[in-house]
Length: 495
Image (cartoon, rainbow, N blue to C red; front, top):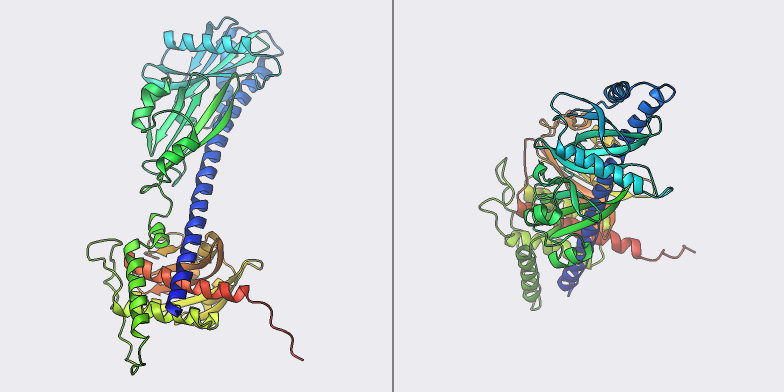
C-alpha cells in the first residue's frame, strides 16, 4: 500500500506540475504578444512625434513645401536613431505629393505610393472628430520594398505630413521570443490587409500589402483568421493563437501571435522533457513499484545488499541520443526507497537528503546540495551539502540573483549549465568553486517552489533524458514530503 500511495502522490503532483507548466507557457505567450503590441504602438508614436516636431519647427513661418520637407528630414535624422531606408513627404489635401526627401535606397515616388497616400488622406478626411488619434497607416510595395506609409495632418500647410519606413522595422523580436515555427503578423481591419508578417527569423516581405487569405493562410497553415478560441481548440495545445487589438488611427489593427508548441518553439525544450517524464518511464516506475510491493506481501526475506546504481555516462553525453534506456532494477529500488520514506511520513529533511544522495550517485555528480525555499522571506535554508565549499554555499544563502540556484527557485524551472567555462557571465562564486558544469532541479508542488536540489561536475557535462527523468521524479518526492509537512496542523503546546 505504501508504494501505491507513493505512486498516487506522484501522479497527483505530476498533473499539478503539468497544469502549472501549461499556465506558465500561456502566460509567457501572452507576455510576448503584449510586448509585440507595445513595440508597434511605440514605433507609431515615435513617428508621430517626429512629425509634430517638424510642425513646431516651421509652424510659425511660411516657407515653401521643400523647406518643410527638409525640416522633417532633419528631425528624422537627428531623432530616429534607426537603420533602414526612410522618406519624408509633404502631401496636399487631395493626397498629391508636393515634395519629398528620401534616404538612399528608398525608391522614387511611383503609382503605388501615390495610391497609398490618397487612401490615407481619404481616411483622415472621413475620420470623425474625437474618434481617436489623427493618423492613417497604409501598406505598400515600392519597387519590391515592403513599406508602411504613415500620414498625419499638418496645420501649417493645411495638408499632411507623410513618413515612409520599411515594414520590417515595425516589430523587433528579441532573443527567444519567436521559435523557428512561431509567427506574428499585423492586419488592418476590416480589409485584412497584411502590414507585417514574420515566422521565426524570416520576415515575409511578399505578404505585406496583400490580403491575408491570399498570402499567409497556406504558409502559416491557418484556414481562416482569426478566432483564437476555435484555433486553440482545433489544435489541442499543439499550437496556440493570441490576438490583440492595436490603435491604428483611422482603422483598427489586429496583432496575432501564433506559438507552435510541438518542438523548438516551446520555451525550455529540454526542461519540458523533465516535466513531462515520458509515459514509458512512468510505466516502468509503476511496474517496478508494484513488483516490489507484490514481492513484499509474503514472508519477510533476508535483506539483500543494495545493488550499486549504474555508472555515470561519459562526459559530453547528449540528451535523448541513441542508447537512452529505461531505469534499471537498481534505479527502481531507489525510487521505491524514497517513495516508502514519503509514505511512512519520515521527516522531509531525511527524504530530501536521501533523494539528493541517490540522484548524485545516479548521475555521477562530484558534489551536491539541497535547500528549502521560504518564498515570504526569499531565503534558502540548507538541508544537505556534500563537498560544496563554504564560500559557494554562502553565495547561495545571501541571495546572489545570478546564481543558477536562485534562478531556478525564482523561475520554478530546471536549470542546466553544461559548461561554466563557456558561460561568459558566470557568477564569480561558480568559477571560484572550480565547478565545470551543474544542474538544478526545483522541488515543486503545484505552482509553489518549495526548494531545490543541485548537482555539480568537475568538467563539462550534459544530462541524458533518462537521467533528467530520474532526478525529476526524486525531486517530486522531495516536494511531496515538504508539502505534507506544511499541511500538518501545529502540534499542541507542551504543558
